[in-house]
Length: 143
Image (cartoon, rainbow, N blue to C red; front, top):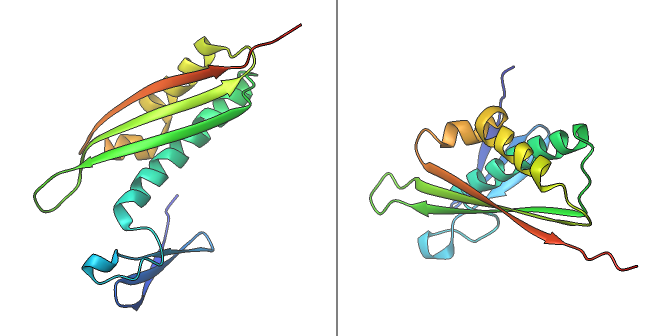
């Protein structure tokens, strides 16, 4: 399967990118000539990484019959100082909340996503050190 994205300049530092029929506006910060109409490209990589691994985990948890009330991924990237600036380190924090969380299965799903299924993790891992952690917020069950 091949993917094709068309990106069109819309003036100044702004671009509209059509991805699978959805338009995403990217822009630069005003300090560098943009008008801040959308996110900058590098953080979009972190968003793609979060979405990729998140979809893997959601699918795996469904197959494992694991229920969670909420699931959030926080991605932080550390850029190099010199050009071309790129992420040298990326850290993911997976936040899960719910009642009676099956932490063993959740950890397995996260590990499988990172080590086997997430293509974005695989690609970014070629140029950056990827690390992750899992945080739980278990709801108390009161009788």
